[in-house]
Image (cartoon, helix red, strand yellow):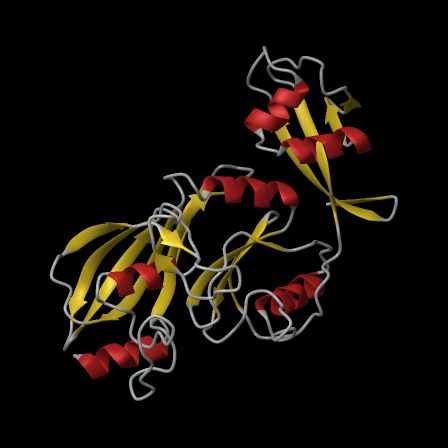
Amino acid sequence: MFKKEDQTYNLISYINEDDNLTLREVLLDKLNFSVRYVSKLKRFKTVNVNKNFKKLDKKVKKGDLIEVSIQEDMANFKPQDLNLDIVYDDFDLIVVNKPPFMVVHPTKSHFENTMANGVTDYIVKKGEAVKIRFVNRLDMNTSGLVIVAKNPFAQHVLSSEMKEEGFDKKYITIVKGIVEKDRDTINEPIYRPTDDSVKRVVDPRGQESITHYKVIERLKDATVLEVKLETGRTHQIRVHMSHIGHPIIGDELYGSLDENLINRQALHAYSLKFKQPRTKEILEFKTDIPRDMKELIEKLR
């Protein structure tokens, strides 16, 4: 990072690999910037080719060094030391293992003690000046891995790639009843009945939603599943599991809550695999399931 006119900038460097593209095409097709952000780069003239400013409609040559200076805003959440489990941190992103009962982003009813407050505290103490952006989110009572982008470039690339096969998200969940099939796919559209409805339903009017699962262990009237999402709808796993007659244990909204077993839905985002947005290195992370889910499994064995 470097300072310029009292603003903090993040420098992205790219060696051009094609002789037939304009600078604009490289930014859009190779570096995956959005059209809106390319317009912003043009306006502020923060793109250089071989250390010199060049207009976006000009051709660039193979081997040209393209450097993009991304302006960063300071984090705009109240910093709070929440002792977060930071799994990974680089110049573009942070991966956090979120505990249960923590909201990701401040809301009217949860404006403090959120992941955003904890991540802000972490980056401020590191001396970084970035505006954090969540690439994926988890329900308050779901635990597991969350990706936080440090700049709009990383957020755009990762959000776009979340829809591709190379972006791998897996969960561990404990559902009610014995799931008979060792593995299966649920392909049922999920719909929000009203604008103010929290609960989602399976309905032909909904968005395509695809969930793959496989059995890890069959317990006493319960099953441990590994779940892989092909789409990322709100409450997708919770809706689909309930729809096939195996609601997640502890899910008060789509099943029932038994605090003698566990006091939240037994769902943990345990695995992520994706490309680093700038270097294209494959990043892979796995976390152990939390203590309350381990204890639940032992109770049901």
